[in-house]
Image 1 (cartoon, rainbow, N blue to C red):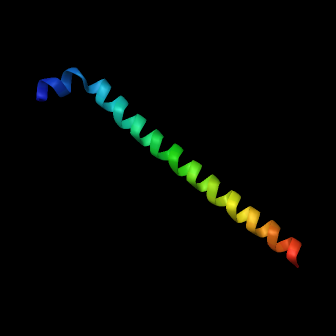
Image 2: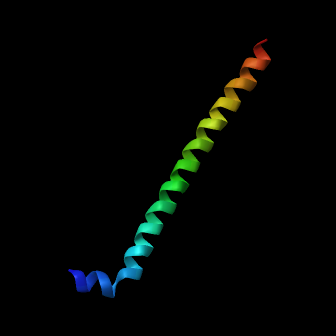
Length: 49
């Protein structure tokens, strides 16, 4: 196992970095969706007043 990790360490680092980037990308998409929903609710609220 130790030899596998030492021989393929660049691939392990690459996988970890890709998982982190995927998490950041997913979080940003979710945040954008929530912000659009809030902006839509605020604009509907302004029209009703």
